[in-house]
Length: 299
Image 1 (cartoon, rainbow, N blue to C red):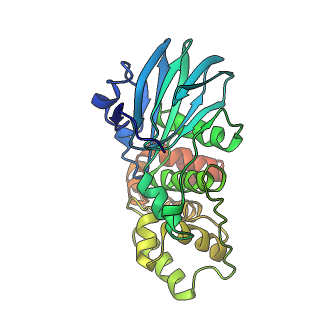
Image 2: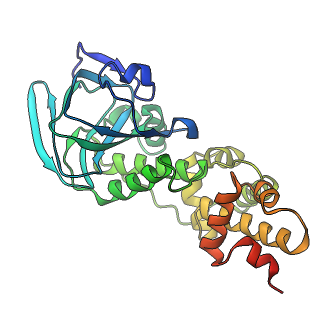
């Protein structure tokens, strides 16, 4: 990857981004404090960004009306018209480029930490052999699906927790390594899942900390394996992802508290690890097809 003389920008620092893009994002994940993944949503007029590189890997999607976008690397310009939902480009950290938004566009940026990708790759191969490949206008429905879910979270129409954000970051890392890297990283297939002792440790920890902000990283540390392999092996052992298992256990505890106590709905949400009452009610209705208050009134 060539060295450039342009600006080096941390994209989640607004004071730095304004040096290349004089518009603030309409929404971002900064306040959500996700660990490995950041999301910014922009509504942009026609604008050109000077030569720069970002300190994070970035996936950019057009999520509005059709727009023409350009990217130049080493004076080689690629330009195309992007319809709603299409991936504009995948740019690795350290890649110098210029970007031009030819006509107004709604752009969603997904940022991943290079260190997270390196640690992820280290479990499979020598991370020094892996480099993310820049890509222009790839057809990738998975990136679109993830992007739209994350966009809904940052604009407030959908609530997702840190555990879901961890899982999304892991999925993005695996996807980039498998489809957009110098080495086609094949994910090893484990057939036995977690050992019984590690599974017991993980499940005991989950049940003891259901009222806390659980993450895959925290659970993986309890059994001393990587976050990625913990998620894979846990699912093989239990039949559910860690996120799905934790949600179900939180709901089981909530059902018990609704039937056996006079605690308020807000207090039950707090005691079962939901960030606030509205999130609890949304998930409860999604899984059980009734509201917490209606469930409590059932005989």
